[in-house]
Length: 205
Length: 246
Image (tube, rainbow over all chains, first blue to last red; front, side, top):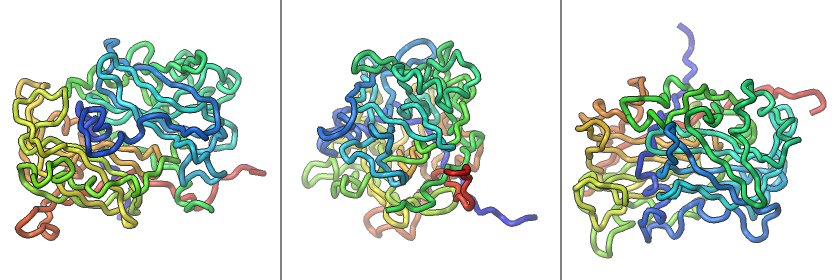
């Protein structure tokens, strides 16, 4: 026998289920008067925030090509200077007018999600090299047993994407486009495919 | 101001054998919603290590009281009055203070207040079914509610969910983000439930079952259930892995 490391096990995940809105966006599901607003709804920025205003929109598709109309997404990203609004950020103080976090249920009719945010700056990889600007996505829904983690990079950052420590290390290059949001003016379109030929790359982080 | 050094560490690798698989065909909806390709391993960067913080200032007085937060003045929902309490810890056993917990559930009859809900059990006009709180300096939380009822759901022709409360938890890093469900000691439906059974390890299932906690019961008022939640632990970087000149 040896000494016990004394570690605990992470609580097992369970699906968010079809009624996730009751807990996370009650106003969206017509439960009024409990919370003034749904946490994480609306733009991620205040008027004073630095950076380019963009809208990220898209849908989440299942293996039959149907958009999920009962999913919920959260995003987490750096500010325009590449700083996170988090106690773990020790390189400087992030823009106080930018939350960095947002939450959006997919539309119950057509499955779209929308985040009004700003274009993030670059954040360093573990070894100090810059990562290309990206937004972390977390997706939960009925039928998803454990939250899915992916990233959205930007189509207008070709050079930075070409040098990104994570994108450049992906063996199946043909899958890299699944991580790129297509920018058209201020709109960035990012569709997520849970399965199939265009299955989005999801991370075990 | 320098953050606590412990907040810089990457998280322990997630135990994917302990956690449920994505593809669990006995839970039918998972079949078309489960990624089929291998997840791409990603060493934690600041994007995963950092996370949003929610202060106690977002909370209203009744946010952790589901008995009163939707009830009409002077009225209360029908059902068994319970207290749910516990701690949020990480895998190293450290308390996680400032963790935002959001919870949601069906009413005492097993009916959710949701437009997609079709179960014939009635809504309770005094029960909304959502609440939230933030853990204190020791990682503790508490809320008061009505014990939810079990309910049938369309999967097999006769599948029933055990009574449960959904929990959404934010730790300090976005990679700790977790949604899970709390079950109640003694519920025979737990071991028959296809959603519970997406978890293959029995010990992992038992970890989601809250015991009756008579020591924290309020006599002549409400019983208590204790539910501790464990989030991923952080590596404590005893020696920094630094590059020359960094």
